[in-house]
Image (cartoon, rainbow, N blue to C red):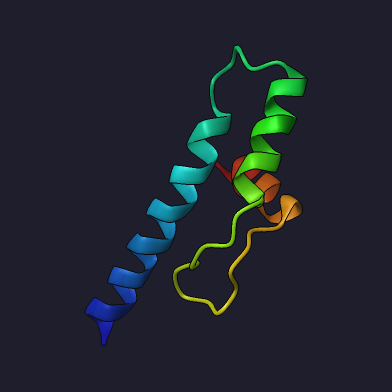
Length: 67
């Protein structure tokens, strides 16, 4: 059970990092950053550990802030 929990935590962390990594370059303008956010949240995709299929903008911004 602990291994499953650790595996899920790792999958969630890697998923989140893959998304926010696109927003990390310092040379992105505000407009580029907003366009990137819109591109990230647009598609439906499986989110590890949940039944949801989309990432909300406030959620993505929270992950970026926490990073």
